[in-house]
Image 1 (tube, helix red, strand yellow):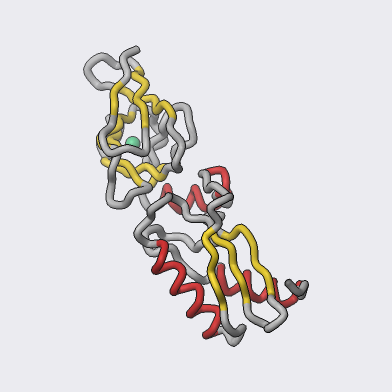
Image 2: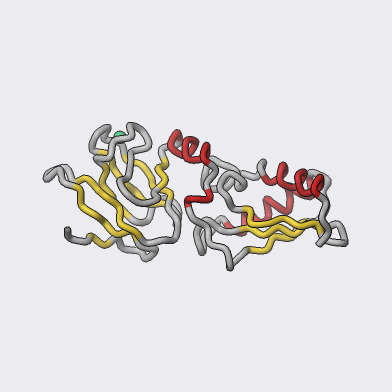
Amino acid sequence: MVSRPAELDAVRAVLSTVQDPELPVDIVSLGMIAGAEIEADQSVTLRLVPTFLGCSAQFLIEQNVVDAIRDAGLGTARVVWDSADTWSVEKLAPPTRKVLAEHGIAVYDGGDLACPYCSASKTEFVSEVGSTLCRSLAYCHECMNPFEIFRDHRGGRLQSWVGSSGRAVPLRIRSAVAPKRTPT
Ligand SMILES: [Zn+2]
């Protein structure tokens, strides 16, 4: 590894132009970059962390990164998926949550689940699997909009408001297929 801060800055600037194929944000804002190194032969090695293990967009991201580095004149890039690091929603850059909310995607990191449209917590978990592996479906009983939840690999309890009773019922989010309701 050779330390060249200026070149690494250029690499990071290019990476911030690579969009996630499934989300309206770039891979730097998503916190997917675990490391970047300039090798002795001038090639670039990038360590990336997938937002969700088994994400089908992983290989498209890899190709887009390699293409972007080459197109920017920064040479050959190699992507290494970092299995030692684990992505979590805490890695999201703060403005990214706002961008996701503007696209109807809530970020779940424990506690009550706020609707991305109206911020109400009268939300109900609908389905573990949404349009992608890393997203689940929910519904807001306040503004009556369906929305998606962007979540990480961790299990956890999602507070869901149930319309008929009006009381919060914890629901378990797991990385398995079927949602499991846990009685209070
Ligand atoms: Zn709402």
